[in-house]
Length: 149
Image (cartoon, rainbow, N blue to C red):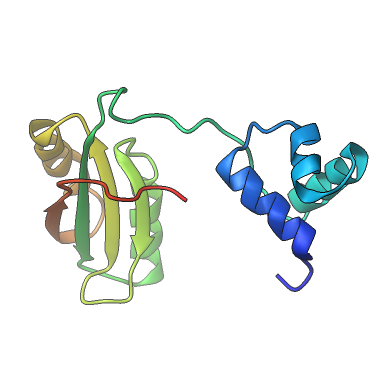
């Protein structure tokens, strides 16, 4: 992070809020002309600060408004078991996020589904069937207060 100056940080901040902003508008907002702004963006991409650009979709409109967080405890936490769990979890479309946690459980998963009935099916048929899963505990989201930025 020491390699970023004030302008680089501002570019990243603006792009995080609006990845579709034109280079011309971005350059104006950070006080540069278009070409130096493009060069800085390219440098930030090559250095790995910008991983990509994409559309932010509305899960409610797509029929995936039900959110649940699942604590997962594994029966084995050696490298082989963790790798098997990670690989299998990446294949389940409904798992939006998967984080290994330093706690009394091993993973925290964010699951998006259509409704509670669909979630129960995903939990029973997919999540509980992941390698080395010994226990799960579900927390259902009542309202998303802040989800991005």
